[in-house]
Structures are given as structure tokens and as C-alpha cells.
Image 1 (cartoon, rainbow, N blue to C red):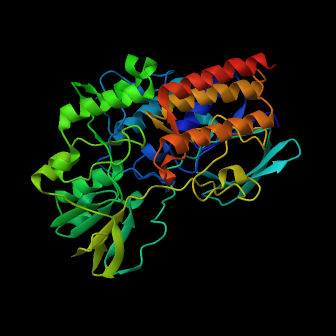
Image 2: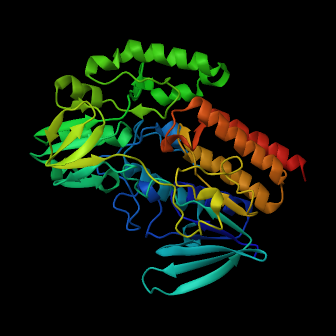
Image 3: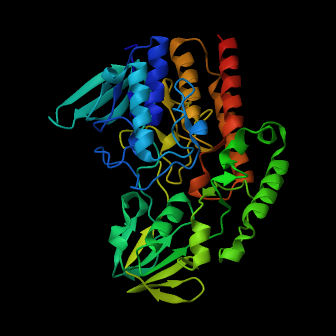
Length: 439
């Protein structure tokens, strides 16, 4: 009963395993696939990876690496998913806990038990099921694996192929076709760029403009700015003003490339990082379109009234926060259709002691170091080194967090899990100190 259940062996799950192992806390880790790495394992046989063949990280390796195991210096600033998956393999080998992970084992259900939780697992090969009891459960199954199609759906019907970005792997399917990519996030830009190299025509449609960030500014990875003295000490308005000035100097106005100028502030939405998009736009290889108004048989009618025929539509419309092993009625804190979750410090469900969510955040920076810090706090709670505040205090913090999101970010399902990299690290460190003082 004192063992901890860890669900998932992706980047967050292995962070939990490493911390629990280092603390001497007994645990079982269940992974649906045959290897660690989750979303970063290309063609992962767990069926959940959204990685495409050409994918590289959008946060530099120095920002992405685990504190307990830095990335090798010989890796490029922005490694490929193949290199990231190898790094995760080396991380597990270095810390020596691979034998603690039960591969090809899916978690079927988690339910409340008298002294903790009952967890039912299923062996994917034998289909046999086992139910075990745990005092605590760490949910680390990720939030970029359950595709969200446009909501509401567009009126009309389309005669061609429709797919979500989750299922895109290589551009060969677009050869000599007319392709429409919907979205302006990282995946949309990458897919549009790849399509434009092989398709007869590529259009990129979007509801609103976005701030396009290059991977490098003044010879350094752009995300290093998130840990610069400016990010550490300057107020948000000054950070935004400075970043806007640097981007204007580096790439000019987005409207010069045919993109709509964003109507929101530069730090009011999750950034889109692309070095290639603006070049392809400048070459005329990608045509910018407004949002889809309706599907029209062989083509699409856009919100400006224009119409164009297409063979393929790729919906880069994000992902649902999904926990199929949790009953939505019982665990309502994380069952919102709008991706709204009610977790104290983005980790703890106030209504279910011992239930923790790891990596369920969308940082302005990389998740991995933050998941590592979350795991340290969870280990404090599990081992009794720290104590949570009252339920009323936790709910008040959750309310304040939601209000801060609404006041800062564009209203969308994409911005319900946002945290600032440095600010959140400080928040967790402060919470660990406060939790130790509550003992």
C-alpha cells in the first residue's frame, strides 16, 4: 500500500521514477509502449506519439535537459526526436531504473479505495488484467496525444482527405496535391513548410495572427532569453516590450510576409517557433488564408468569401487533456471539455489526497526540468517531508491561477495550462519550503 503508482514512462514519467528511486520510495511504473520516451519516440508502439519524421525540439537542449542528467555537449542546440529519445534511454540507464518499468502494460482504471487507490492494469500481449493497491498515484501520461478536431465542426462536407496533425509523419502523401493546413502553432508551421516542398500548392489558414519567434536571436537560442536577467528581474511589460523590439529588428513586420499582425501581446499566447516559415512565405511557396468558413465539396470557402479547391486538409487544432483511466464523474477536477483543470500548483487534486499530475503544464520553456521539480515536491509529500495546506487554501490558489490566465492570455483551449518557466520553478521551490514548515 505504501508503493506509488506512476502512469507513463514518457519524459515526465521517467522524471518521477528517477526522483522516487533516489529517495528510496517504492513504486511501480506502467508504460503502454515497449520503450521510454512517450511523445518523443517516433512511431511509438503505444500509438500515442505525435512526432513526425523531421521533428526537432523547439526549446534548446540547455533548457530541456534534466538537472540530474545534462544532455551531452556534442548534441546540437536543437536536437531531433531521435536524439531526444536516445537521451531519455541514456537517462534511464544512467539512473538504473529500467527494470522498474512494466512495459506494454496499460492502465485500464484508477479508482478510489479506502486507503488510497485501486489501479487495474492490462498486459497488452496476454490481455490479462491485474488490480493493485497504492497509497499514491502519479499521472504522467502526457497531454499531446489525444487529437482535438475543430470545435465546433465546420459546416458542409469535404470530398478530399482530412487528417489531424497527430497522424502526420512524412510529406510524401502531399506530393503534387493541393494542401490546406489549418493553424498557426508549431506543428502547423512545420507541416506547411514540409508540404510546400512537394505539394502543387500549400495554403496556411488561421483564425488569428501569431508572433513568430526564430530559433536564434543574435546568435543564441531564443529561449535562453527566458532565463536571462531580463526574465528574472524585469516586469512582464518590460519583457514584452524588449522582446517585441528585438523581433522587429531581427525579422521586421509579419505583415511583410503576408501574415496577419497579431492582435494580442507578445507574451499573451504560447509562442510559435519557426525559422523556415517566413522564408517559404517570402518565396511564395505558402499562401496565407483566413479561417475556414465552411467545407464545400472539393474545396473550402474562407471567412473572406474566397473559395479554393484542395485535395487534403490538415487540422493542427491541438489536443484534449484526456485521462481514459479516470472516471470523469469521480475525478471532475481534470475532466473539463475545455481543458480546464483544477489542480493546486498544477499538480495536486484537492479532492483526492495522494493523486498527483506530473507534466500537465504548458510552459514558456521546456516541460522536462519543471516535471523534475514537480517530482521532487511530490516525493516530499509522499515521504512526509512536506504537508499540503487546507483544501480551502488550495482551491483559492487554483481560482487565483485561473484568473491570472484569463487576464493575460488569449482565450482558447490552448492556454489553460500555461506557466512561466522561471516563475513556476520559484513557485514550486516556495511551496516545498512552506510544505516543510507545515509539518
